[in-house]
Length: 322
Image (cartoon, rainbow, N blue to C red; front, side, top):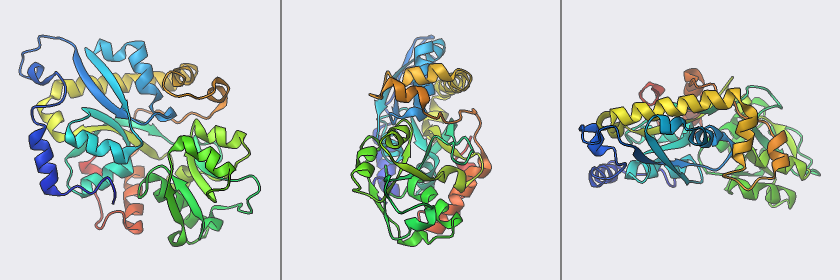
């Protein structure tokens, strides 16, 4: 399982070598910072999902908690997980499939807040499976035997695409998944280098503007009101930097609520960390930022992962979730 396969010995070594690394809050937890500002690095993929993080920084919600955030772009949860484990990131945004796989491999990670969720509306979600305009594919069932692009292999993309195929009555075992960054997917679909792609906003709207057709809302097909991602850290950070973790959680939860209540500002902040056309940002569909993790939906994902072989034993997500 590329990028996520880290042995217990390697993890122990990583945690040992990073015991003295991380944010400047180490001294603060021992009472040595006297209320000073803590600098943290947060790994986050540059897509619409993390608009609340950037908006919260802009609105001063993290500064209110005496936190200075440096956002480091990643390609997805599969890259964010080792970044947090190694101490490169203090916190990160990652999809829950990456986190479930990590916990199944005994990596000491734990979610601290919701990242984002599906809108729960078929055909009106912030992502989906698209095909070229002239493609004969009209339903997810017809993806059997086809090539489908996802941003990370063996992750939330292929897991939920398979869920759509099953729901439509198709055979998901014969699908060939290929890895592409989200920004490259609209062109790949338009040029028919792949039969289909799972894409999220803002690239979902870009693809449709270029003629791509939506054949399924895979998040909606996987589970009602699916929690897709979470902000997470290591158990060590939670235990040894409890005050920092509480302050970061308070700031991101305030940011999530603000973004949900101020969608126009969420669209606007997207322009500061992506190269998206303002016209696309204006009309694209935003994810839900409920501020609450739908535990049942996360367990459903874990069960789907067992079916697909991403994990070898049934996972109780209670250990992962806050």
